[in-house]
Image (tube, rainbow, N blue to C red; front, side):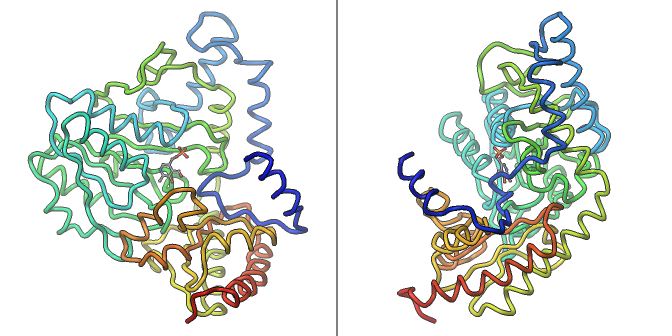
Length: 406
Ligand SMILES: Cc1ncc(COP(=O)(O)O)c(C=O)c1O
């Protein structure tokens, strides 16, 4: 395997220009974040944060400062309500399985949307198969929005936990979350509402008090922080039992020693993200619109996945190129220095095409030809221009040899 990849990389070479759009799956960490992390490896806070000595206290202080920074950005919550995990996946597992384990005697219904990240869907199914809960998936419309009337039919007195993301990671739909929270809590005020905000954080307002949610997931690498660190907001009074067993450090619910350099880097990424929030979003939205318009006006047989109105998050462009295999297009673009991902089965190394695209009604072949671009503050206008120069030719080349024809 590794020999084959080495061979592949040798063949690939280094394209003269590179544009990275795959922030959905991870991205580079900017120097200013790395600079903050480095001292924590060997000069400050390298001790265990639960031990009583100077390097331990420095580590503890770094955790606390990062919690304070995060707490300010989600509605000035108590920093103690934030728990550091090692990823968004772990935060989602802690929220759902942690709730299910703590309430296993009560059981009941867990409601999640059909376009949730699999780190929400699978724990909900796991709670259903192993702990006696009943997991149900709420359908969405062709833009990925949940119809409040449909949602009402899914939430009842049996419902104990709801998990619905604020922004979809593939098609960028901004859910009308507060409306859904109100519906759920009207039916049963004891319902615990979790939102996976991994793709919302830094792009839409995520005030947990205004949203009235009880738990919220955040992931560092979605905002150009280091990967391998995530956070879960848990409102004071919500009780969880950790699905992870081991020696506790500072985090009462997440055993294992905390990774201080990554936590310090996460804090820096948070500060950068919230400095000039609105102007960054306007900038990225303009680039995104130029990219979508440029592609759909020059490449025939395309479909934009997700809403094309105020319900689309500013950084997301997801386009299906009909009569093209998404994986083939990611490779063709990579050879030209443009790095994207696809909702096609093979490139994402899963057996099925994207469940999100299928849930909004895309056919298998439409999902297979989809390409996801995520824009950030690091993109420049010339990156979009370069993409618009390269992409139509790449699609044309692939269509010329494709067995499917318009
Ligand atoms: C919406 C959403 N939730 C959770 C995750 C998982 O986060 P992590 O990659 O930090 O495990 C992702 C990552 O792609 C995501 O997009």
